[in-house]
Length: 237
Image (cartoon, rainbow, N blue to C red; front, side):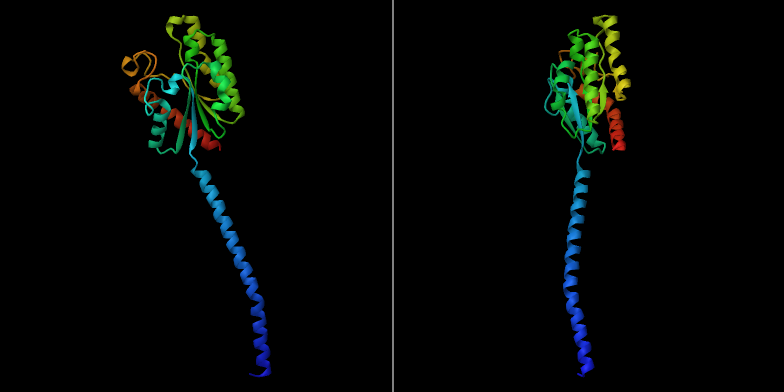
């Protein structure tokens, strides 16, 4: 090989020698970027995979008094929503015998962070005990305000007073729920026991609580409102 050829070969070798480390560094950076990309995609996928979280917050009607573990309202509502294609969890935060005062005192720790929708169902025990509608309204008002501060949507489940309590009490109590729904801009489901109250075939022997068939009817009737509430929350997020 002549001198010119040797110089040319040397220059080529020298260039390739410098390019080797550059290529390796580039490959390492590319691999690192790819790993980072996969991590970001995984985090996004994981976030998207999280189910929509609902908490049923109420008294024995929510807790499933007198029913089996799979017969209560929250469990059956979750099943119905999943059957409609919704990836949801519905937690049972019902406490038998709870009043609106009791609910207010436990709201913060009963509704965990990350909850996206609360079905608020309280007031029946206030009514049965003859608690002043003003007190019930004040407590529910405070609960709605707390949930709004936490950016948690609410579906307010209304209750109706028994006629034997008198017209004045009945009118005052029944008006609580539409007033509060309008004030706080939340969805109102007018009567939680719609289709069950006054229907012995849908009730336990106590004539107050729904049996398994009664829960099925309650879920069937409230389901469209829950689906709308989910859609609103997702549309605002």
